Image (cartoon, rainbow, N blue to C red; front, side, top):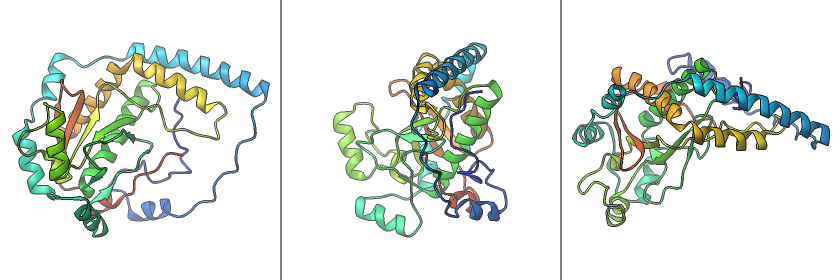
Length: 284
C-alpha cells in the first residue's frame, strides 16, 4: 500500500492515543540524529522509482474505486450544529483574543498553542484573515481527528492524505476585515474568535507527508496530488465519517458548509491534559 508518510521511528508516540502513558510522549520528544542525505538518483534508480509509482498509482485508483461517497443522510448529520451552538461552546471553552500581542502572551502562558505548518495529519493553507493558534483542547481534537482519518484510509488501502486547515483563530480586527471582503463571514461574533474552532477543506487534500529517504518521493507526491483531486469526494467522505464519530462522542461540533467548502469544527469538550500538551509532529 502507498503511504508515503513519516516513518514510525521519526515520530514514535505521535500516532498513539491520547490516553497512553506519558512516558511514550516523553520518549517521542527526545532529539534524534538526523538521517544521512539520500544518495543521488541514477538513471536505473529513476526507472525503478517510476515503475513502482505507476504500480502504486494503479493500486490507489483501484482502492478509491471501492470506496463510497457520503450519503444524503450522512451529509445531513454533518450539518446539525448551527452557528449559535458552536459560539456558545466556544465562549465556554475558549479565550476571546483582541490582538497579536495578546496571542503571544497567551501562547507563552500555554493557553494557546501554535499549529505546525506541516504535520503527518495536516498542512496549513495561507491564512489571510486568521492566525494558526488554537487552544490546547482544539489542537488535541485536530490530532485525534487526523489519527482517525488515517485509520479509515488504512482500512480502505488508501494513501494517508492530509487535511488542509484553512482557518483558525481570528482577532476582532481580522474578523472585521474578513466581513469587508467576504459576504459569507459572520456579521456578529464568530466561533473562530475563541481559539476553539478550525476550518478544514472538504474539497482539497494534501498528499501524504514526504519521506526524503524514499527514492522518487517528489514524483510520488505529484502523482498522489493528482489522484487525490480526482477522488476528493471519497476523501471528503472518510474525513466526514471520522468527524461524525467524534461528534457522536461529544468531542466536537461540526457544520459542513457549502458556500465555503469546509468542515467548520469547534471542540466541544476538554481533552486530557496529556492530549492537550502533545506536540504536533512536523513533516519532513
